[in-house]
Amino acid sequence: MHMNSWRVYSMSKPILAIVGRPNVGKSTFFNRLVGERRAIVEDVPGVTRDRIYAETDWNGKEFAVIDTGGIEVKTDDTIRSQMRDQAVMAMDMADVILFMVDGKEGLTTADREVADLLRRTGKEVILVVNKVDAPSKAYDLIYDFYELGFGEPVPISAANMTNIGDLLDRIVEGFPDYEYAGAEDSVHIAIIGKPNVGKSSLVNALTKQNRVIVSPIAGTTRDTIDTPFTYKDREYTLIDTAGLRRKSKVSDSIEKFSVLRAIAAIERCDVCVLMIDAVEGLTEQDKKIAGYAHEAGKGLMVVVNKWDLIEKETNTMRDYEKKLKSEILFASYAPVVFVSVLNKLRIYDIIYKCSEIADARRMRISTGKLNSIIEDAVMMRQPPSDKGRRLKIYYATQIGIEPPLFSFSINDKELMHFSYSRYLENKIREHFGFEGTSVKFVWNEKRGERR
Image 1 (cartoon, helix red, strand yellow):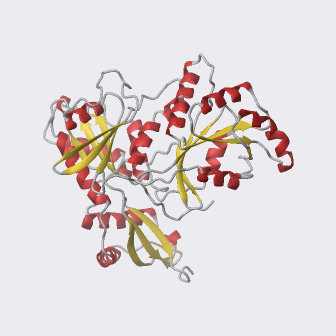
Image 2: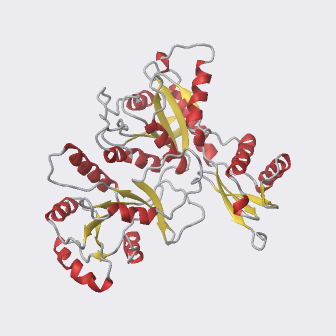
């Protein structure tokens, strides 16, 4: 697969959903498809990854992939029923659906039931027959599947990566061309968090109208709802999302799907507002979402709601913020705002801060200024060395925005330790700010200098 050494971040990417009955090889295919993809932040400690959603590219075309649970259409089992519903949600989000069946087992009643479900979506469906290990037997194994009515089936072996290239060509052909059509200065804000932390109430308070139905029942917000509004002559769009449910003791696989809507909102936003309950504090779910926003290169801030319920002492706010940031060290750049939506306390500070973060994501640093800062940093702290060879930094330049992306010309990538990379990032932040946005680095070895 064609893998870039650095990622291009966009407002929206086409989405591929992998669906089918249980045990046809969906997860194997998903892992093979995205396994080679290594994000710039791969070595950042504390970033929680979830293997249900990932991004990859084929011949320069970037897209997102969702791996769904096995669909059992006719089931009374609550968990399986939920998995079916969540798979339908993934299908609804998708631009192209990959319908996977098992060539060794042949066409089953369960496959026909999934096919009926897919026909109702009106989406582009590619029928893939997995476990076709010998090309000579391909026609015999795929013949029965023609009756499903999705055109010519594509025979593959996910385990052996056979015929994957042809399949990816077909997938990419089916994607629409995505372009972000929003106003240049408009800021898209995704409000993320668990049920009952006050997300919908915040949208209502900020826009002064009940555009979102507010209810104390967890999970009332069924879908993302976009609410455009203007504040101090700047346009914003609030993307309200379904809350993340608590960890299920019954099945972790259901838990994975509960983040799908949040991920979809993060993909479409400029700034992610992670809203937490002041009494409950930061949960594992919250850390996972912060990790997604960070890896996607989006702006990030944490809003601590229900601050009015906390007993205050002299340094309560400072201590709370310090503890919170220690729990998401990978995103310690994220500002923290303490509010009470109920009492309208500091709620417009959220919008003010989002505006600042959006501007920080678009900031460009001149090459001269950047190299001056890097030279000073190198003088203050020598780069790492190994077996008598020391890291040399020849040159740095900014090559992208949203988030800010910097390219460094160096002598040997292996000498660039994470701790020194973090040191350089801190120096850049000291001089230029970049509050609320990740800063990405890419290392390029200068030819002929490594040895």
